[in-house]
Image (tube, rainbow, N blue to C red; front, side, top):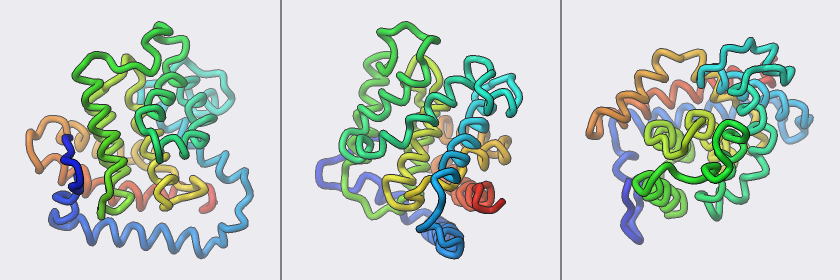
Length: 244
């Protein structure tokens, strides 16, 4: 995804059929849920639980063979442990994501890949092409845009998941980055939505739309992914611990 200085890199996506209305409706539903629950006084434990639910779902999507109970208890396989490490530190990277997205992505991978890949590969792109892709994604995040924050989060997720710029754990990194964008851009400042659990619940659609995003070779796959994201983010609110 290339950017032109001074241009809105996501402008063309905001006029796709069904996208403005879809994201507006989803955001209204999320805002209503957060407002109606009086979440200005929400206990920190709800954020912790949301992050933990997200880690479990992300690990299972990444191929963990451990049970949700094992992942929650820290007694899982390597993939589950990677997801837990990322969830534990992810929110500390919100300020970094706002000003230096490349550093945030690198740190997410360093957390996820610890012990699984060589030290010198932690947080480093696989090759020159992957490095360029990360720079372009970073520039997109730093550029002014009129695109809804949820759309930005969905694009960051799909770009990282499909380009797989790191040596391992790209799905975990992509889903963590998505959550960070939702926090950093004011959609979900206390990180109470659980988009990872929504993607797990919609796993067939999630994986097929990511494949379409990667392989369509044009706007159709991107359009389909964004329409899917409006549904997933609505479900992410339903998966929130505040609904319990």
